[in-house]
Length: 432
Ligand code: ADP
Image (cartoon, rainbow, N blue to C red; front, side, top):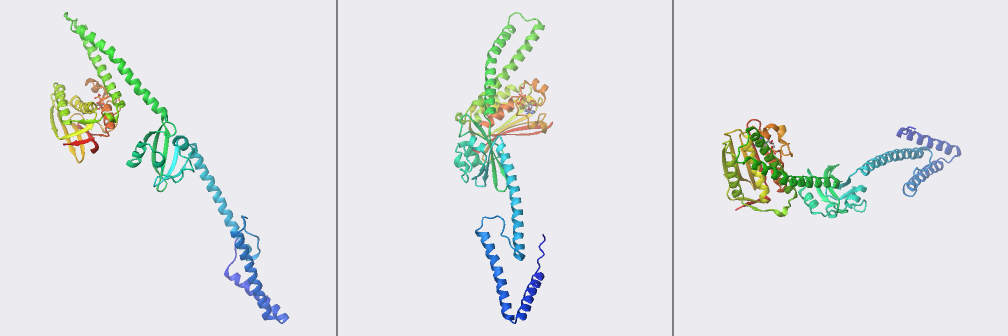
């Protein structure tokens, strides 16, 4: 019912009320008395409903306002209508929140909503099973006070959430968790934790499998190579036909040998720990690498120049760094056409140390650059095979650098040349 109550109507009603009172007053000869009695009764009527309204607001448990007639009836009806609207909206909002909560509960991951100060605002049940976080019991607590693993503290301090953090579940030591932070709502962070124990176990199995197979292949390869060399070095020269066959066998056995050796290096790097890091005399290592490079360069005859800062060293694993740097140098020698220009530099830039190898070889297409460090990825398989490449060299470099918190930057222009740079962070640099 539309509320047709205007000031004009109110005034008209009052005028009619007092006019009738005046007529009655005049009729019984008590004008002032009747007018006064009418005014008092009108006031009492207003007070009565005001008191009813106040009592209903403050004391009553009833959801609907009390019944009333006239103007007050309209006021109460209006209030009743607003309350019903509000309750319908509230019900639909509660229902919607319920849907979202159910959705968050159905997630296979633990989900925790954190405030900007990393205090817990809400979490699903899975958070209890994976991280031991209970809601609402832990509500308002800082997440880093409850998850005390050093990896997690470092992750929170570094505040670089582009990569996930991997840690052992505080609830179950056999469970590996991958934790991600992402911006959520206004000034909030959503923490998602996923159980990656299965992936972790598979990864371990893969590592062990590759390491074991590589190791087992070494002995038969050595035996075959020994026999091939023995046959080739017999006093009686082999028939040219057989000689060619043995040459092919020898070169293929050497290739397999290199492949197995690189797989073993990769396995070793994956198994190594931070504890093995020691100061490395980089200028001395680079000098040795140059000696090897000159030997490799005999056929190609590149012009190799070296710029080396003699006072600059790093902390790391000697064999790994040597392997990474030597891979970059041997690639430059192998992929640059004969008589090319190769420059090797070891220098400081700001607080970082940079090892780089630049060549004027064939370069790499932009679409291939991001995939170069994948295992067995070769841009041009036939060309790579000719150079004896296995596609594992840059995968080794990547793993070594990950291990040392270093970065590989590849700058390359198709058909103009490439520059591979290893950037060591300040924490690993030693300057004397
Ligand atoms: P490989 O053992 O085949 O050399 P790498 O992982 O070392 O494997 O290199 C992967 C691919 O990257 C190579 O197949 C080659 O195509 C390309 N590549 C590496 N270094 C260079 C370079 N200096 N110039 C051009 N291409 C290169």
